[in-house]
Length: 253
Image 1 (cartoon, rainbow, N blue to C red):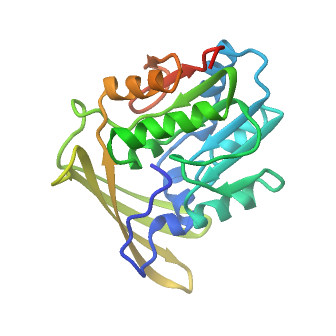
Image 2: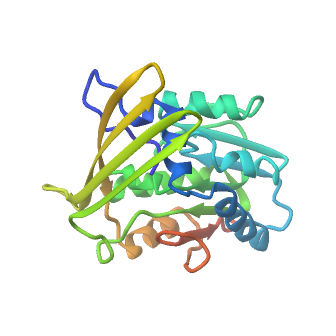
């Protein structure tokens, strides 16, 4: 999950530290290359000549670095300065900027807009979801493709789920533990994440974040797509996690 930091005010969270974030998720086996290949295949199937792509919630550029090998023009936006700094190191020369998925406005339009790693779960309420899909559609050419990775649906969310891992990467050792429970006041899950990070000669640092992730239903996602003038298809089986929503901007929109 990318693009939101729930660290307490004045403290450092994991999303402020792109190198630590990368080490943890790569060490946990996240395969950005394979995921990007699946997304690219879906785009090409629906828009064979697609040449431009916008990655919304691009994080540290884990997917975007592979999209840059497949599309002539790529661009990314995100909310976390720490993540964007890591992405800029990985993707020199690629336009990367700070932007809110609910309301961003860029010059030009794209053949494809993608939003992966469940970044959309950081929204609140169906109005924000609708506004986000409208932002995506606004930046698409007619016939352009949206690919969106959802977080969990209410029916497959697992309350009380605990996860943990220890990884070593480039001299860094990081331990991550998370626990996810229902949010007290809205249709969302609350994930509390704690990380211990050790580097030679630097001691051990502790980071904690709380992420409140919306539990939108499949019907709510589909309504947001159609409300933005997009077709919508939900596909599973090829992509890890909770599948993908794929939409096409209708020619008259």
